[in-house]
Length: 474
Image (cartoon, rainbow, N blue to C red; front, top):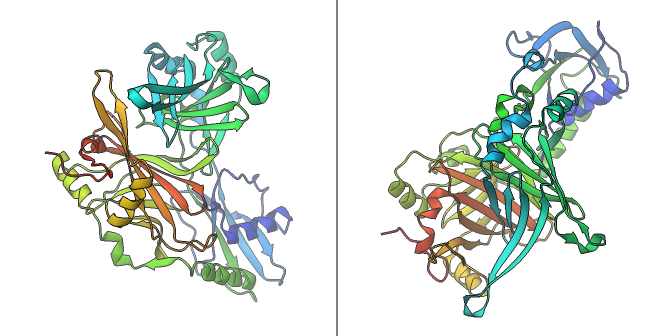
């Protein structure tokens, strides 16, 4: 469900570049998958933009298609505006920036459908599952994915070595993102590897609005894990700052005797339009049928075990009062949104879950992932756990997760059955009372799990009845 940053036109153009089809007055820079491009076909009556990415008339190639159509394609001059700042940086090393996190002995948690992950920074990583047996006895299944063998606090010699090395990066939704690695070993024995200890690499990534959240836990090879942590501490280092890659335009003008756009490309685009036909088209006026607020945040793809999370992100949902927000959320008039990239998600409580894509040219394309029917959910709740509990340290039992079933989505091309989704509403404490995290998994084709976590949800979970149905708190 992801889209390549290079569209068909750009791929066609780059094929010509790589094949060496002509050139301009200067050597072309090496093309990188890290930088997204977009090809425009403006015609002959066109002026190069004077703001943004820099262009020069002599930085072009002549592209010839298999049909002998010729185009002059002007390329942008790609430059990194932060290079000088990185060279001049004399501030704390990444290890020194992370020292407060390790000295506080703080821990971060991520609750999934079965496992809970606990990262105690600079100490250990634990994966566990709690089950209550008869008589309220708690049975804990746990594995240590890694332990810190030596103090991670800043070692001047080590930091000097790190400064000389190239900063490692991880491909996160098409964006090569720099990270600071901390290795942990000597975890629980792995039976699949002759009882060798489990090990992990903790990847700390800059996110200015984060609170040291666990973004993802992935088993990259048997009993070896990668844990991604979002932290604001690294953002003071220019080499670790997140950079949103702008889309760089390539302008291709047809030469005499050639059409405005290659004939084969026109046919390809028509075929793509035909492939979109199974998706339900939503009219522009429907885009504003629910209340929503503009926001910006960094959203990342996540892998947890063998399951793939499509998108995850934290946003600020509203500045309404808590009582007003809860009432509007439970009535379905205030919807939670999440995800960036090609697909985004809309969850309206007691109404629907939609997956959608917005395009300036074609409007909004939407897929119904699930629709609420109270009777179907109650039948589902009889066979599944609709509410899960958590025993606090003071002995009080509280609801931790409430699950709802939304069926009757759009028919899936792979299964010929309607899509369906289980929505898991989870309490997530945060310094920001109106933050919400939305993520989606697809454990089976067109059968989804939508996770919604927020401090707002903490205020209503204990109102859940035996079927997990919520009500406005007294």
